[in-house]
Image 1: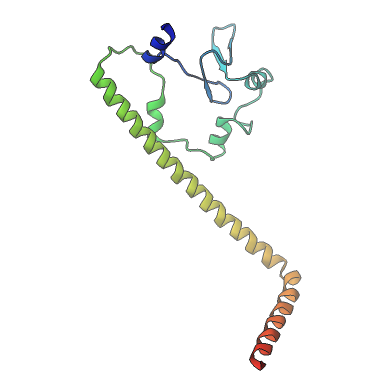
Image 2 (image 1 turned 180 degrees about the vertical axis):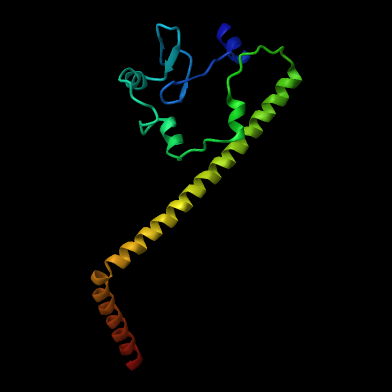
Length: 166
């Protein structure tokens, strides 16, 4: 049928939402064309409404732009170069296509590995900061904790002495 041939060719064009950077699949979302001819694609009405309210995507917490500016996602990486849109037509070559698909898989694996390492590094640095903050709080409030600790030590010593007596 006509639809299966179209899917087999792989002619599906995936756009990026201007506001949140998620993918806009064909037939989904909205497109806004400004008077100067610039087009903006939105994946859902939430993004379109925020755009109309002149919200800054870098300050809106749920967007990809916020996550990148806040340092929660990988920003500078060579693997992002492969994702850029290219509008130059290229003659179809089966071998070249096969090599390209293999390279795309490899790039995706590399990116996943780097993202995992980035997240792990972020979590570890967060743990160090949290530990330092906890120690500072303990030092400040040691007068509250000290009497309870002394009583606990006395109970432990009493329990040990009872076991030795028995």
